Image: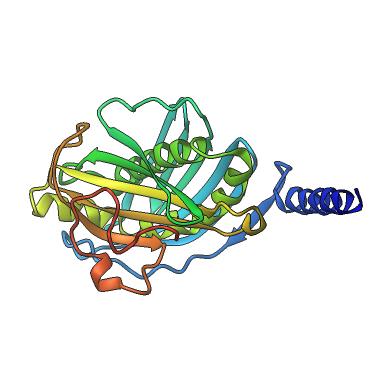
Length: 278
């Protein structure tokens, strides 16, 4: 009986600690600066980078702000707002800056976005689980404005994040969303170059991946990792299309260990050199 009481007491104490670490309120704000390397787009030697990001996360949605610096011709002011079932994209360009604001709504009832292929994939490495959300998008035509490119990137973030966070529990989602934001900031810096690369290589599709993995042992509940990958896809954006994934940018995961191998083309939706757990 005494042993049973001790076990129950330890279990209750652990549950209190776990609940204390979860962001339970919607008023938690975190600000950070992501200094991402400059990127040459290849068309007119213009540069675009993520200057900073802030985010606010709660149990049901993520609010994210990214600022891009575009070193090129002076851009016309442009305001784009796209509202869908899974979030809101707001883009405003002025001078050499583009401001992206996202509201991502977490939902467990995600449906395929018209014209795009969105897939959810699972893996179960030892003592871990992993979920990967893969979005395939038709490559944008040459001459598309930087603001429109950023808006499409925002739509990909909303689709991938909403689908991914909806596939995991409330507790894991509360831990995962904060891990995803810096990964998204890294991918944002290369998204313009991605479309230009796909066009020059005559690839019809670009892809955008977001993933999380976590330790299934309850005493390692805090062990959660995030992963992001984007690149060109040689097939069509339709579901079940065969093709090769050609990575252009990777964020999070184990990229620092095998950077050359990780950037090699692969046929599986899972990068063989970026296997979970991340």
